[in-house]
Image (cartoon, rainbow over all chains, first blue to last red; front, side):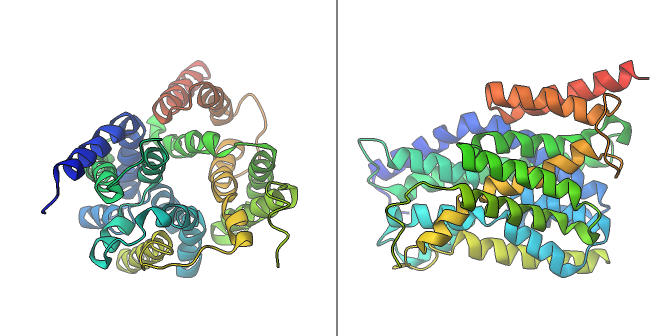
Length: 237
Length: 108
């Protein structure tokens, strides 16, 4: 690819950086693969979901809604809301790729996962900096990608064989719970989480799993009301 | 919905997700997000994830069940404690599933 030594070195730093996170990625990917098979999808569709969306939380939610019989629009809106966090990641990481050529951007975009984002930003903010952010992010993001797809396939293979009484479907909310804990950083995010929990239960009777969208919007609203960070700076327009 | 139509939905979700990931990354010289949008986006993970967790704990059978005889609520409480303590997806999953199996075994 015509990369210099330093770029290759940074690529491998990205690969290494991703290693400790795989302990969380692997079980999540297996559960996603199993859930796809539980929904009665064909193997190629189960593989396809994970390649096309490549975002576990939204994959699981969409499969769940499919089983509830939700209409097309609700499924797409739910995936949109769950993945809104990528807009935040995209905005915060973009300045580091200022001047990057257009041909790398689609790949970089596809590989922007929670883990790749967190690893990259941590690395870019280190005092020595990162001269070739693309190489590092491709190393980290590419590793997450390959391991995710591999263990999604493992879950697909296991999927049909695991008895329902094992309750492995409980792994889905447990995974979300583990992802939730680091997202609660202060009082406004805590209130957002509590309001969302209560709303999701109270509006559970809403058809087609619309309660997820309601709960998310109520949570964001509650967080915004309480949010006082950057108050002085944001009195612009 | 047929499985074929569902796969079409998957492709739509994939396109939406790709555009969200690329919203500021796909095109060079992207603009900064509006400050108000940036503020709201900060709350997305904390507001979305509980909506996927709480019904699975409080109403596993579809009705609200806040009692000790709700094994998923009890197992979820154990997993939450572990998640707060260790912040590990792996340990949270493991402790939650083992608790669920243990509670179901004790309750027969």
